[in-house]
Image (tube, rainbow, N blue to C red; front, side, top):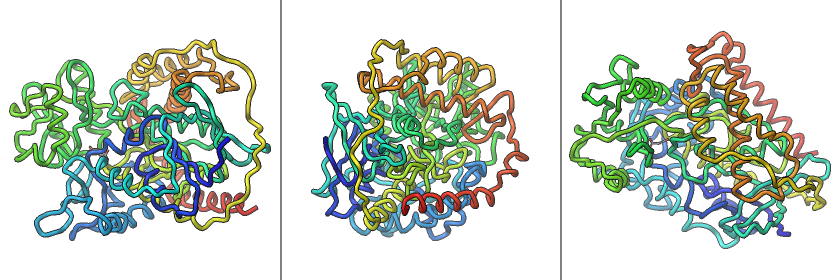
Length: 524
Ligand code: SIN
């Protein structure tokens, strides 16, 4: 049995930002199911959105965020995070030479979809996630112990079931360990790998959502999955992301005849919000067309996008021809574990930050480059809070160490889960496709699983994927309208009457109430 003050599960930007801001007198463990550098954040190309340019203002960034999120956002959460963005960037830039600067020594600001201003701070052209992760990894303090290949498979609650006090972990050799901690932080990312086509790292399979859900934490907005319009598509499969910043620099989407496909679809054309671009490409592909990014107007493509150039060359795409074959694929989960701004969930002692959390910043569709921003914000705020909060002793008598061997369970292949999710709960959904998926999921009788101890890591991965798939499918069935990343062909428009009933003012009131409840729970 191992005990720590803070246990961080995951190794993306939110986790690293938290780790470097915690006081050095804390005993901190960072557990990651694979390797420290294997995360969605590490793969991030575009950058971090911040109203930092001379003509920009956080109010404009906020407006773009709400518009892309189709006003499903939590206004207060969005406001707090966006107004803090410039100082989060300056804080990092003041300590290290991380971001790309222009010849005047100002931040070089890129453009991405649905932004009205150039406001994407980037690093190494298209290597923002990698460079930022390395910047943090170098700063990891000595009080933090990183444990790789450690798969978190069950959260441990106290005997009353009212507080999270630990996590059960399996290693590659299937040995298991319980880690107890005063504060357990889920920074496990989203669930992109639930889909056949995805920009996400192979490890991003929805574990954190399933863990929190099984422990009884509130989960929200799971129907809102963002499909990025442009994943490199070669030999019938996706090979990685082609950043939206490529369209920000002037590339346009064309069909096999070179005809632009976004003309007349949205006033922002190729830089329309992602759900609109993805739905348009989906329509073309369904009708048998091929879609390409025409990059002929971009000068110095290789300098501005070194990683994308390498990716294309690796997969035999000749960039001198000026056309990159693309398809949309799952990219980001807007919903997740319901948290307040600093990551407190509905279970005291359990926190979620980054993509696994749902603060409400993104609404129904995330604005490009707002995700690293949210991770930086939450990581820092949670560290500040944990550095000051009084640490209650935790009782180490475990109530949910469940008995029973449940090894012989029928489970599908990962490919089967991914194909069915793409087809039935993907870019376009309907009651029929969702009910079909629900029925398919029911055969695995997930609700009958009472103990996770006896499953292997690969079985647990599939079980967690199925739990998360179920949450998405149920939420998508319940939302009988189309909004942002959730498109129902049987309800193709937004139901604004329903939206008005749950207006932003009401959401603000609900959020304040929740803060009060959590504060009370933590101080009593
Ligand atoms: C991209 O580079 O297109 C991805 C950026 C993001 O998802 O925010």
